[in-house]
Image (cartoon, rainbow, N blue to C red):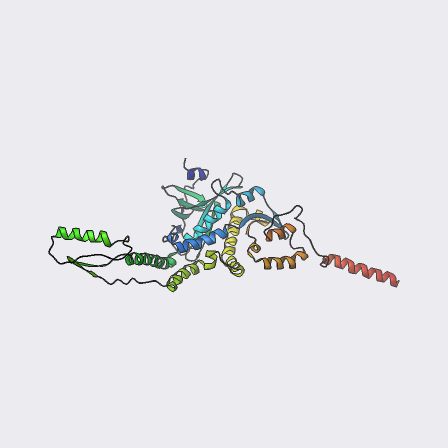
Length: 400
């Protein structure tokens, strides 16, 4: 039995499911197309920078009741945070889904559940094709076609899906065709630089013999001259000849690509992905990281949180405060000055525990460090009211 057959073995495909058409009249069919975007070193490095940082997000099942939040099911949190399936870690899973998201503008994962509806595994999917289908009752399904011709139909409620450039199709994100000309230009630049280096390392010209030679002899002489001089190994760039032939060099001026042209193409790719070069090179400062987090990482966290919450919990469970949140300690990327100022201002208010403060400073936790410390200069309003009322009562008694 293949891995896919084992994975989807418990799902019973509907026999009367048909193709669904979206409001614009076209079928809701996904075919991964990236235009070989991942073959571009610039595009790959930028996507890798996003995926690496997004994979540090921590998915957590929480229960929020009357504004009070507490951790949820420990087994579910282990799947979300440690090992979503036997083949990858939580970091690997998020990295893979985010990479698919930026390459194909659609990312899918199968949410494996037991007979009671509890999550048992999350498996990122890379289908050759996916088509939305529906049965007579209106139930939505996803029909996946994998390499080798394997086809499986899975209920939509068991498929994690996020979309980018969500515009023309009601159920799918658009393709990356808009960036393909820029990627082709970047490839042309790389090839031009390579060919320029090769052409500068060889001799170019016409070989004119001063005697009549047979075609076979002429070909042999030409091949011998090429092997001796017209190759990259001729590092000196000089040919030694006698008077039996004349060598007429051809002027070859390769077009040089300046740094501004290279940077302009690179910047177009970064702009398309919404990322700066300093993030890719990991030379960002505190403000650049904050902008990157808020514009790129945080939207991904919102998408993941909403989709996992809806697919893992029923409406009743959500009404009782069950949700999945993806969070990261943003202060870990702040400067030491900023960390110190924040702790100096907020620790006296009791907003951080001792261990939370140590975590911000990248220091290990200590025993009994989950308690909050607070200055006596900051008093609860309830205590202030009791103190004032008590004082008022004393004055009235003295007056009597």
